[in-house]
Length: 196
Image (cartoon, rainbow, N blue to C red; front, side, top):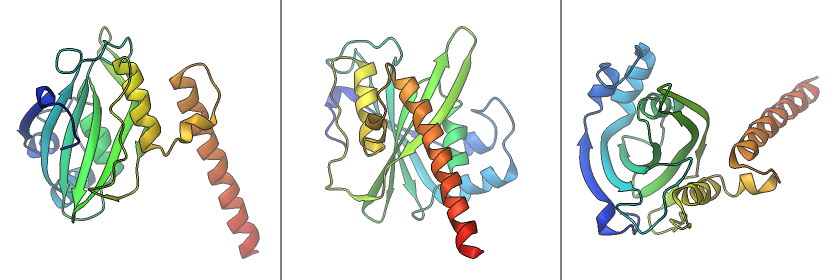
C-alpha cells in the first residue's frame, strides 16, 4: 500500500466492534465515542508490521515496532477520541492511514510505552492534511526504528518539529504542544479584540 517491503505485510482485519464493545480496551468507552466508531469507520485493517525482523532496520531504544493500520472511512471526518481509544490499547506505535474518496490522511501519535508498568502515555496526535493517493508524503527511512519514527512524525507534522532545537524528540514534541497552546491563546485574543 505505501511501498513497504512484502516482508512487512500483515493484512489482518480488525473488527471495530471489539473496541467499542470493550473487548480490546482497559476502560469503558463513552457512548459518544462508540457512536463515532459506528458512524465514521467502515473498516480497520492491520496492513503492515515494521520491525527489525520484517525490514532491514536496526532496533530502536524507544520504538519497538511500527504498525500500519488502514482505516476506511464513511466521510472525511474522524474524531480524535477514536484514535486515542485504539492507540491507548495497543502497546506499539501505530501509523494510521485513513482513506476516503480516493484520498488519504496520515496520523501518528507521540506516545511513550512503559512495558514494566504497563502504561501508555500519548502526548500528542499528529495528522496530515487529506492528500491524493499518488502524493508521496511518508519517508520510511532511517538507521533505526527510532529514527524512522521521528522521520514519519516530521513528515506528518509538515516538519513542525524541526522548528524547535531541542536535544530529544520528546522535548521537541512538548515545545510544539506549548507553541500550539500559545498560538491558540493569541488567536482567541485576536477574535475578542476584533469583536469588541
